[in-house]
Image (cartoon, rainbow, N blue to C red; front, side, top):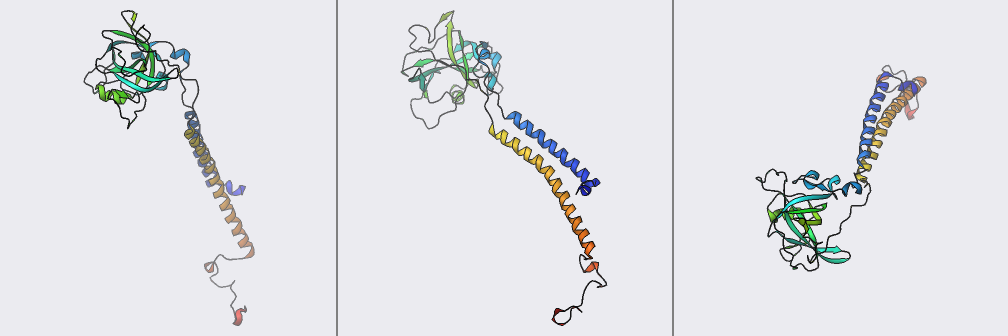
Length: 287
C-alpha cells in the first residue's frame, strides 16, 4: 500500500487533505474560543461610579461590560410618566417599584427621533401600596444608581394602566414616545441642591431598592462546543477519505495482479480469439 500512497497524485491528494484538515482545526479552535462568553465585569470596576453618558449611549442594546455598572446622571423627571412595576421583592416583602421617566442632561441624540432628548427609566424606590403618594421631584436632580438591562415584556397581564408586570424599556418607549437607553437605573442616591429627596430621605414613603453586582462566572456556550467538536470530526474525515481512496486503489491493483498471475481475463474483449474459453459439449462437458 505504501507504493500506491507514494504515487505523485496521491501525495498531492494527501497535501490537499492535510490543508483542508488544517482549516477545519482552525475553525474548531475559533469555536472553542467563542464557547466561553464574557462574564460579568469584576465588582471592583462596576462599583466605581461613572457618568451614564460615558458608559453607554441611548438607542442600542447594553453589552455585558456595561451591565451592573454604577452610574451618575443629572437631569429632570418628566411629569405624568410614572408607572409601577408589580411583584417586586425587597428583603422578602412583595411590593412595587416606582418608576419615572428621567431626561438625561447631555445625552447624545438618537437618529430617527428628530432631536428629542433621550430618557432612561429610573426605579426610584419600593412601596407596598401602588397608590402610595410619592410626588415626582421637580427641577434639576442628580442621581447615582446601578445600570441594569431591560426586562422582557409580560404579555396577557391585565390591571390598572399604570401598572406593568415587567420593566420593559420597549413598552415604556411606546408609552413615553421618547428615545431611551436599553436599560434602567435603580437609584442609590437622589439629590436636589445637595439634599436627599429619594427613598433614603426621611418620610419619603419608599424603601431603597437593594441591588448587587452579578456573581462572577464564565458562562459556557455548549452550542459552540458542539460545533468545535464537529469541525474536529470533519478534519479527521478528510484524512480518512484520502486513506480510504488509496486503500481502494491498492486493493484493485492487488486483484489485477492476481488475475494476471492466474491468466484470468477480465471479460470477452480481453480474449478475442477464444483461447481461454472451452467449448461446452452435451451435458455441459468441456471439449
